[in-house]
Image 1 (cartoon, one colour):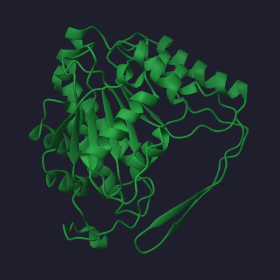
Image 2 (tube, rainbow, N blue to C red):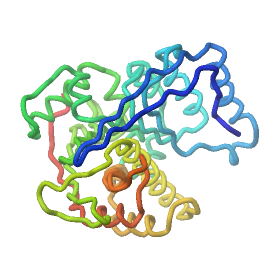
Image 3 (cartoon, rainbow, N blue to C red):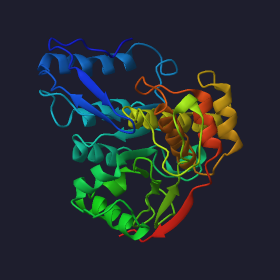
Image 4 (cartoon, one colour):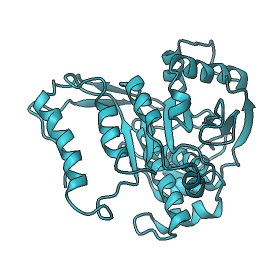
Length: 326
């Protein structure tokens, strides 16, 4: 069953200008989506869950990505999420968009990923399997907390994260994780604490710093030298999201059944060799390796598995920092 809805509006054209160590993407505006086309998409999701038995139509994870074209209501992502989540109690959801975020966080906060015991069994933490992935610059703009210079301290990052929870009160109830990327600089994964142990016993937000090994793009050789630059970063963010979600779902699935026929064996072995108690931390580290490896390829969001695994294997274990859950 296809979820692709062909629209009357023409597809937009994106043009990438590539320099020696930087790339810029020029994106045309999208055409307007009609109410009928939106209804067709919603109907396609409903039809998926009524087309067969529950075993054959299960959904392990969903990724919500990107901007929405004109004509789409701001709560469309939330509407689609609710349609899927009501059918799948232990759904993994990665959000790589800020479009309609208040509506989406509200929908997520209402969805309970099974009972507490089931959540502990599935992910080892009891934490919600919902993650917001966002670039640090975008997050700063979202909460209106800015900084001069490129360096980011843990204290500064803590202020930005608190700003997120103050700007979006439902975020703490909705999210288990906030994944923050920052180009070639270290990325961060926040495991979200609670005010009263709603879904887990962690009452403090924990920030994990994940350092990304540097590399050069010539002949796909890795290099830890200072100043190494990626040539083709367009699409790397999408690759991070896809790699994170694939690894996360695999680790959850392996915990339950140990059987997987859709993920490359080399990736499975690499993930199991560095298995972390919190699957999302390990999954995000792998996603970052995939995104970095994609910068070596001219085609957007394409990477060589060996390149990603080499980066992943050279990563140090993420370092945790505690912050108060205000």
